[in-house]
Amino acid sequence: MRLAEALLHALKDRGAEAVFGIPGDFALPFFKVAEETKILPLVTLSHEPGVGFAADAAARHGSTLGVAAVTYGAGALNMVNAVAGAYAEKSPVVVISGAPGTAEGNNGLLLHHQGRTLDTQFRIYREITVAQARLDDTAKAPAEIARVLGAARALSRPVYLEIPRNMVTARVEPVGPDPEWPVDADALAACADEVLARLRAAESPVLMVCVEVRRYGLETKVAELAQRLGVPVVTSFMGRGLLATAPTPPLGTYIGIAGDPDLTRLVEESDGLFLLGVLLSDTNFAVSQRKIDLRKTIHAFDRAVTLGYHSYADIPLDRLVDALLERLPPSSRTGDSRGHGWPLGLAGDEQPIAPMDIARGVNDLSAAHGPLFIASDMGDCLFTAMDMMDAGLMAPGYYAGMGFGVPSGIGAQAVGGGKRVLILVGDGAFQMTGWELGNCRRYGLDPIVIVFNNASWEMLRAFQPESGFNDLDDWRFADAAAALGGDGTRVRTRAELKQALARAWATRGRFQLIEAMIPRGVLSDTLARYVQGHKRHHAPPKD
Ligand code: S1T
Ligand code: MG
Image (cartoon, rainbow, N blue to C red; front, side, top):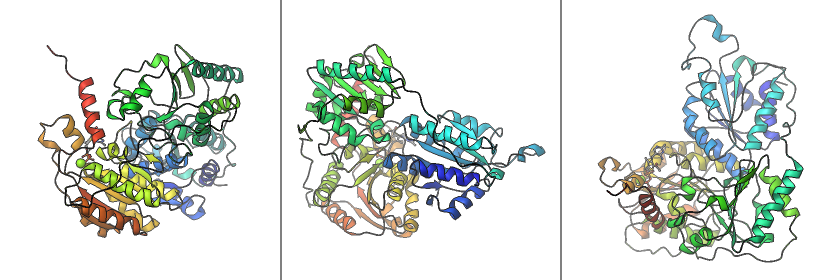
């Protein structure tokens, strides 16, 4: 079969659900095969950062591979930030880049889209992907594809494939299965025994879950594990949204000083904290009320399990969870569930809108109609989301890059069987990638988009209130919605917000944009506490 077909079949066999992309002349042959064979649906967007975010979102949403296809140079290099974010947050995005044909570099001319040398792009991507291949050899291509996709799946990080344009239709054998990754069964058994012994010896064990649990598709098993262990479950900040639809959802999200004080105490006073798939990042742990002694935790991450002062290598998370389940009898115990009620009851009055009002309004509708999957950008919208019911949440909670919200929501709905997604985004982030909404109509997508418009880079203002550059202009995003194929409403009061939310929930078939005007300086409670916590940690020394 043709090389591009072999690759597309390999992606589909491994669970990929769509190809997101923007073509260019070096990528036209690949896009032609993708469109004509229909092996995977092709979703084109407007700007490569959006392509990267949408592919990342598809990976996060389906616990599978996401696919981003771009052209050489101008396209691929335009997507670097999104792929770096996927690397940081462990999302297995497969970057497929078109490239000059195998003999095109030989005639002495510089080629368009060439940065420094013809290898520049490959070398840049080597830094932000875990495996790479240039598919320039028909005999080797199938094994190279299996090796690279295998690495994406085993390590749950991005990978890079470059296809010289004359190779797209070259004949190759089909792609075989992923190569095996070594696991020492004895080490796995010893590790599982030791983890259980540690947990049993603890007086107040706690299980914290984070993104790897979702990346490896382990939510159902981990919910079962928590029940059998009989330990309370919390998510990290980055893991927010995990197990949201489990029979016993987590108690809540650990955000140190910014979060629920009881939950913070539970985590920080635990003598058996089991960090399952947890990123040890500043966003997850820097705002601790009391410093957590990480040497006393059990930490499973990146195929290693660390207990105190020693580590087991080559322990995949799924194998660890299986080994723990094998050692524990089923339990009929029902665990502690989210005890703290969600804020409900948005008042329909003439007061201006604060972020918490948006949480209330969303929760009122979620309580009535069932919660939606949430895609959030960085900004106060993400901190506000900590008070929202969700059916899963994705956000750049660690990498903290802006621009993720809108395209990731589009990506999630594109692969989610049409299930509606709620997108939360600040005005600053909307300025970056909000235009991608113009692609919803072509693909029949109808997300609900709430723009937290404070005409401000408000998070930055919170850290540095004296700087005038954080004042943004008022862009009137709602007015642009109709031109982009959706409906837009700008709201200033809680009554208007309530009405707009109800209308958005009731209207299907077009994206619904609610531009919620929030006065500058008004933060969610969580962000206000988070900023205080950070300022305390990073305060300059007193003379
Ligand atoms: N550029 C990109 C791509 N990502 C970033 N996170 C930043 C810059 C820095 C930055 C923040 S927060 C923030 C910026 C510019 C302001 C966000 O403004 P807006 O989207 O309107 O949200 P809000 O007003 O709620 O803050 C971070 C975290 O470093
Ligand atoms: Mg803002």
